[in-house]
Structures are given as structure tokens and as C-alpha cells.
Length: 135
Length: 348
Image (cartoon, chains in turn yellow, brown):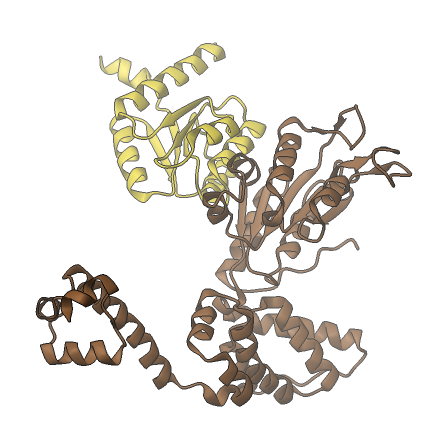
């Protein structure tokens, strides 16, 4: 059992949301699920993290409506530079998810409110899909 | 021109704009720059262009508020010879001219809804067709839009298409009004005084005195950086800080009241007697009088609301309002409150 946990790769996730509470809840949950979580509270901060070399992310989760660089922008930039990184977009209450989801090139769009377990399942699915592609 | 106009300022607001430009200028993602008139939206657009890989291609500017709808459409998309009466020769549209470069759509908030749909179509398909043409032309123009409107508000009022908003608003710049970043005033003065002194070929001007500087910092700059530029041009030509700055402070208030620049000034102009202001000038302004007017207005609203709710039962009303019966009667009289005609008969 012990060997198995050590063998399992610890995935690094980039979590982007301008809502501090959501950021706190999600990162706490994902850390419990044994992911390494790096957070950014807006698109610009996320881009800086993304461009710094030592941060090699396996998956990105981003809100869509944010100041400066929106989630749609973040996704476009990431997909231009690193198309293999899977991205989950989250759309909020009272926004218009249809219009936004059409704009974003996210692998998956998740509408708030959602179950944390649902998010966990989607992450696992995207990561394993990517791993299978690698081998 | 092969260097961008400088983005001057030391405030956090300007710093973060510089940083954002650095991060997005090579993405070609649609941009919206918003902010009041005169804050420098075009300066930001040009800085984006000059730090992008498109800097050797054209930068084409279209002012969407300056042209009537039909003309704007043919300006953007062009037309074929004979497309309409007077189309004597083919004309290439701005989308064509901006191919591989930048199309700067200024005052996008003033574009008509029907043209917004056509623009959306171009942005979605990457193609457009000139008036009278059957062929679609591919376009790779980087669209940078600017507006002094609050587009979110325009969305709610149905004046701006939601799908176009989301398509354009991928990178958002907001430029803070100059009055909210006074620390930028000094570097702006230094830069423009130097520039205008060279331009008008005058000797370098002395720095403003502390008193002058204080009033420049305290001034609310409704016309933002553009207004500051105009002031500095005058200073350079007249070689007199005091005179220009005094003029600024004495002329600014009445024009603002008249123009209704913002909600605040409209409240002021609303409460002042415009005739009085015109004939007597600023002397007619009295804070005491305005205070009384505002208070009266609010008291009148509240009291008449409570009276309405109680069916003009004054003893009930005075208990709710927590004032004496006598005070209520006095207020009703003083504020010219009258019961609705249906109640009048019962009361009398």
C-alpha cells in the first residue's frame, strides 16, 4: 500500500478565481485530495505563475469572469502555448454561462453551484486521459 | 511614428497597466479599454500595438461615434464599385486595411445594435464582405476597442449585445480618472512642459510654486490628462503658472454645473438656480442654502410617504416619525404637503 502511494505522481494544479472564499474552499478540498495546489486571484497573476519556469502545471481550473485577463483570455493564452494542459472552466451565478462557455476553449465547463466530488471526478478523468495519451 | 506615445505615471494603476500590456501584447486576443474621456485609452492601445509582433503592420483607427451608421458600415467593411449610388469606385474597408495589424475601434459603446451584430459576425468567422460584394474576405486584424461607457450597464439596458461583449472583452483595461491618481500629475507636468517647450520653442519654464502645485493636485480634472495637456500648453505659451491655474479654478465649476459631467454635478446643478448662477456667478452658491434644500427634499419625501401609509392620520404619523404632533403640523405647512384630493374631503 505504501509503495503505491509513493508511486502515485503528485499532480500540480493551478487554481484561478477572483473570489477569495471560493479559492480557499477549493484549494483546501483539492489539497486534501493530495494535489499540489497553486492559487492565483486573477488572470494576470495566473499568467505570471504560468510563465515562471519552475511552475509546470498538470491541470488548470479557472473562473471565467475576472478583471484584467478574463478566464477566456487565460485559457486562450495557455492553449496557444501549452495545448496539452487540460483546463476546467467554472462559470458563476447570474453570469451567462452559454455566451461565456462558447467563447472559452476549455476542455470542460462546470456551472456553479457544483458538488466538490463532481469536480474531483472531472479532474481525475482529465488527468488520466492525458496520462494515457502520454504513454 | 515608430515609438509609442509614452504611458506616463507612477501610480499603482498605471504600473499595473504597463504590466498587463507586457503580458498580453503578443496574444492577439480582443481587448476593451475603458475609462473616462481624456484618460489616455488610445495611448494604451498604441502601447499594446508597439509592443506586439504586429508593430510593423498598420494601426488603423475608426471612431465609431463620429459617423452615422451607414457610413460607419462602409468605412469598416468597404464597398464595391456600384454598390450604391455614388459608389463610383471600389473602396477597401478598415478591416481590410488593418489586416495583420491593429484595428482600433474607438467609442465602441456608441455603435448601433445592428452594426454590433455585423461586427460580431466578423469576429466569429474572421471574414467579412464589402457592401455589394459576394465574396467573403478573410481578416486577421487585432481588434482593440475603447469606450467611455460602462458596458456592463449598457448590457443591462440592452444597448450593447451580450455576445459581442463577451467576444471583445477578453482582456480588460480600465484607466482610472486622473483625479484618483494625483501622484501622476507631477510626472505628467514634467514631461509635457518639456515637450511643449520644445514644440513652441520657448525657454524651459520654471517649476510651478508649491501653491500652484497644490491647486493642480486638488483640482478634479473632469477632462483628465487631455485637460491637463491643454492647461500645460497654455502655461508654456503664456509663461505664467498662476494666471492659468487661477483661471482653471474659477472657470471649472460653472462649466461643470452646466455640462452635467457626472451624477454629482447634476445633483448640484439640480439644486442650484441656474438663472441665479448665470447672473450672479459663483456668489450665489451657498452651502447652507443647498443643505437646507436637500434636507427639505428628503424630509418632504419621508413625511409624505408616512402620511400616505397612515391615510393622513397625523397622530399615527408623528409616532412613526418620532416627532411631536406640533412639529409634524409645522413641517406639513412648511413643506407645502397636501393630502391627495380623495382624502381631502374626509379630512375637512
